Amino acid sequence: MTSNKIKFVWKNKVYSISNPDPNETILNYVRLKLKKTGTKEGCAEGGCGACTVVLGELENNKIIYKAINSCISFVSSLEKKQLILVEDLVSKNGTLHPVQDAMIKYHGSQCGFCTPGFVMSLFAMYKNFSSYNNEKIQDSISGNLCRCTGYRPIVDAAKSLNNVSRSDQFYRNRKKTLNLLKKIHSENLSLKNGNKKYFSPKNINELKKIIKHNPNSIFLSGGTDLSLNVTKERKEINNIISLNSIKELKFIKERNGNIEVGAATSLKEFELFIKKYYPDFNSILKRYGSVQIRNVGTIAGNIASASPIGDTLPLLLSLDAKVVLQKISNKTVLPIKKFFVSYRKTRLKKAQFIHSIIIPIFKKNIFKAYKISKRVDDDISSVCASFNLEIINKKIKNVKIAYGGMAPIPKRAINCEKTLVNSSLSEESFNKAKKKLEKDFAPIDDMRASKDYRMEIAKNLLMKCFLEIKNRKLIRLN
Ligand SMILES: Cc1cc2nc3c(=O)[nH]c(=O)nc-3n(C[C@H](O)[C@H](O)[C@H](O)COP(=O)(O)OP(=O)(O)OC[C@H]3O[C@@H](n4cnc5c(N)ncnc54)[C@H](O)[C@@H]3O)c2cc1C
Ligand code: FES
Ligand code: FES
Image 1 (tube, rainbow, N blue to C red):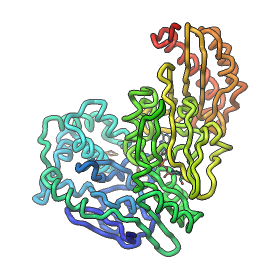
Image 2 (spheres, protein in one colour; image 1 turned 135 degrees about the vertical axis):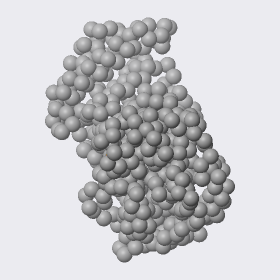
Image 3 (cartoon, rainbow, N blue to C red; image 1 turned 90 degrees about the vertical axis):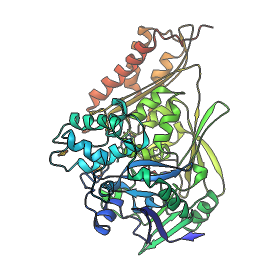
């Protein structure tokens, strides 16, 4: 079955939009069509959180609440979701939601421009967890900026939620909402609006048919990169194929010593999964954009964007990951080190998409990763470095090192690696190896960092890695 309507739940009713403009953002739809202006536009690029709304998603017969940036999410992503706006938090009798109440009590708002966004981020936290510590609170509001109040009163407001009732109107209406969400059938979407088309197939077979008839289409995953073409560059994207409703692309599995992650898996899901294998991968993801970005963005999108400062890319390079590429007729597996060609150019061919990413599990190795950016939260890297070392009897048997922000593509430090292989785990070896980084990279000056700073940081991160591992127990004694 194919439908030309987006259907979603709002205020306990199912709404539908026929053939919406595939480039229309949720923010514009909400403000201009629904006339709900509580949701604000600050930056229009996912960086300030003023536009945060929450989407309720049906998962295992439960509703999971996801804060998203409505300014960079296309309206089509409302399909089969519950839309929750800041206005919806106030009960019919005018009672404020506990989150709104707390913001008032703790003076969490001054000019108020950022407040709806903070309220919605805290609302998602309030709904998804039962207690709120500093880490959870800071994570939840890492994508929200406030210029007046300062964060302390907002954090205090969030902490006070530990002492309020968990039964809000969304809890009381949960069965009704679940039934409404279930009532919306999962259908293939095919939208046409003027010269723009949007497809959202439910399975890979349907996807292949769409690709065959629309080979020049652009794939959409989280849209955290793609949508900026519309919101910032004022371009139009004519043919979009969304991969987000394809269940076969939403998986993470461990098999034969590898982790395989499907292209439509969100960064947030992957962040939770990867922690027990590679804690440093988890730490980098925790500083990747914000919760709003990670709730929708994907590793596949990060790889396909091929930005030299894409955070997962040096990590995947040092872990020798492979990219599973799929065309209509065949699937191929390509080592990620061969995937990046030149600045933002990859080996992806027309009508070919990333199916999944395979990441080996190096049980006996030491894996380290560091991100250097101007701000801790919600900032892009100046330099990102990743180290994967096998050490036996204090000797480096194998080493893979990769950097982002040091070249037009994320890249392995081959000369540095060669110097370290078979050398002893000593300061002397690492001092020698760090000089080789000058042979491996010729970084550039830009607004994030100067070339000299980048080189200095790259060398320092190598030494930081050495200092952190030199006394580690994991160093095998054969
Ligand atoms: C506020 C903000 C903060 C950010 N912070 C970070 C950060 O800290 N670190 C970082 O690395 N990046 C960051 N980014 C960039 C962006 O989030 C990432 O590049 C993200 O991984 C893109 O994934 P996506 O699923 O949203 O991709 P999309 O935007 O949907 O797509 C990006 C590109 O990849 C293509 N594509 C997507 N999926 C596939 C597929 N399966 N097969 C083939 N092509 C595909 C699309 O056609 C498009 O060209 C940030 C972006 C914003 C707006
Ligand atoms: S308006 Fe700034 S994140 Fe959307
Ligand atoms: S209260 Fe003014 S920006 Fe936050």
